Image (tube, rainbow, N blue to C red):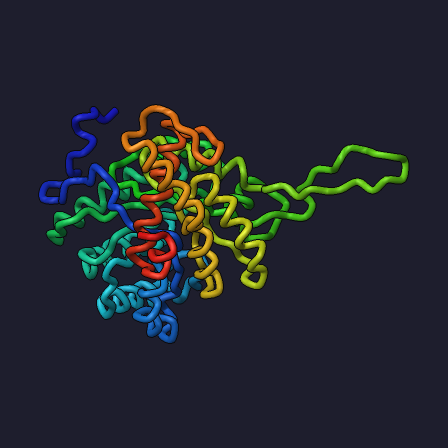
Length: 347
């Protein structure tokens, strides 16, 4: 077991010290870009102003014969673009693949000073994080990087779900965890081919009424348990939980419902795989102006968070003060990226 005093020590001589607090950044959507397609890469400079995170995808959805082209395309894209306050991430290939080692070594060598986060797929346990943690430290030292590259895990196997708490606390390099519903469904032998979202056959029925009375059916959320478990693990470790992909680009209403469920349960953002999902993520993961206005009332009435007051007929105390601070802090981040929303928030 690593002693607490050693937890925040660099894992390689000359590597930057691990962060003790995550950077305060707006990450409502992680927008996936296939970097082996030049036409898509060319649009990234325009995309930077529209999204909170640009992610160069090297794993699933990239054909095996295009893996090296995707890696090279991501490096070229990163070098050619100024990202400003927009995050630059990459999803590398799984650690058991023939591409993962070259993904990490080549990308850190080429653009490690610009890279914010490495997303690691199919994380099974803390051991996967420990391996990447050590490797990144060695490469940071070798290439004299001044800031540590963070790690984001994808929860997409039954074993990973079982070990999610230890994954979340595996390293000070941990940024967050995303739900990967498609691979997780396969790992669990779930009977669905959908990429996220609900299923019409996963439902409960209203109680029997009269002999011929119709019984209303209520569709349930396949992912409620897993999201809740992931959110708890992330909150306990002080890192960020995210909903992952929603595969039906045409069903924007269902996408928004799934994103909103995740937001209400504590997720800070979601993946966007198509431009049509970006405004949905912006809308869902930005707090409503009316909620921010009420939260500001609470903070004004309880400046230090102590005591209890009645506001609009509802009791407010320390617990609601903490909830209000979460909303107002998020609104301030949104306002920095989106001045129009800042005006609506009255900031």
